[in-house]
View 1 (cartoon, helix red, strand yellow):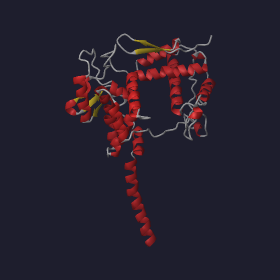
View 2: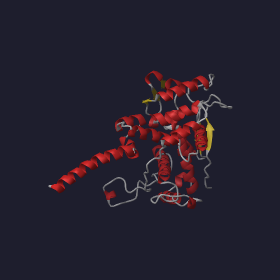
View 3: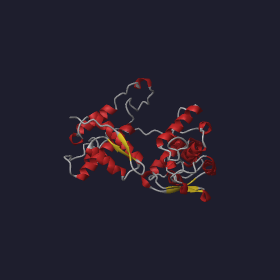
View 4: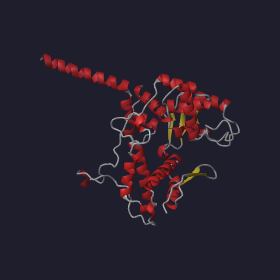
Length: 346
């Protein structure tokens, strides 16, 4: 009998959710991951494993590297309606390389868990480390299964950012947006703020659970603190049971922490009212960090502001800051041209 994964989200006592796909080993992995990864990561694991086992249609202990390779091929096939979408020349018509690589990482993590348990028939991780190359004889990894395409993130211009802010209907929504647009916070970091994390006297906020579980203090604009003060005075329910800063304002969940899905609905509606085709939460963060770089903030300072573990992640903003790059190029090009002119005269 072929296992057919069905994704269930079950509420936990005391808050949060547990994800299940209906298989003992997969559900055990998701439960294990929930104790060491962020909720968004566990949710992504659940969705990615569901996608994988729906395509492979085998019991987890029967999966082979050939099944993984077939899955990669299937994910890169054109999707219904793809003929109506404009694609970049270096990308296919299937899922993006980043999505496929993320799904492979989830599958590999699952089988790494099974190997660590050592109580199942699984003896090897079926996800290949890479394709063999001439160099792979000397290296641990070969060519990647999926060729990644790294594109510059989109940002909002000042007019688009102003239109989005004007389309927001509550002080709460404006404060959350300013946390991302003026402070560069991630969506989960903004939603995770607690009342005690607001350091008004220091003009900073404390990020208790950043990406990877890392903490940091982030300077914020006085505009954000003014908006938060108005929100606390006029909108946040005084009988809210928890200490989360941003909560639901109406309905049966009034006073409960605002969810990721709730914020996404707010932002989608605001973009529609503002007439914007883009402007996701992550684009707001990219916009902030790009503007800070253009204004002259050093890469090291920008790395600390963004909460990047590696400065390589921050270096993308060198390319986004077009005004800064153009100025640097003009200064260097003028020096080169002067040298060439002097050489021609000599």
